[in-house]
Length: 145
Ligand code: RB5
Image (cartoon, rainbow, N blue to C red):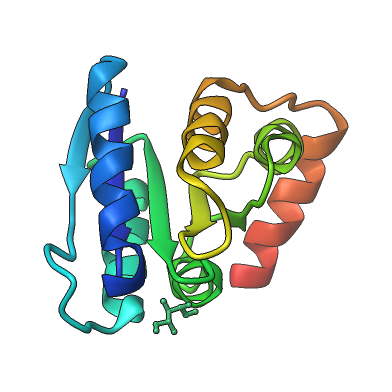
């Protein structure tokens, strides 16, 4: 599976660790930056990852900033993106099963490395349940117009 990943400076170090974790587990990575600890603006990276996912350059996306909030808001402005900010493995699993989330958002200043890896693994290996949840996904798409 190909995974697009992007972050701001507040999450650069965790992004690098997540990339190593994913590559070690056989995933292909589309790294959309940022590439250092220098201050950058998270909307640019949330947009880039969101567009990579909806344009099928990658199957799933991961976005990271200090809290995970700003970059998840930005990614969610891209039509077709369902970005979920998760803080534990239960929400990482449920947002795949119920929301068919296609982008995982992580707050690098909010969670430890091991939990971040576990959330990433859970998110990428859990299938959408469909069924009663499908109609609700379609209702979200209708809001987008
Ligand atoms: C950057 O300092 C910080 O505002 C950003 O990483 C993020 O937490 C915003 O939501």
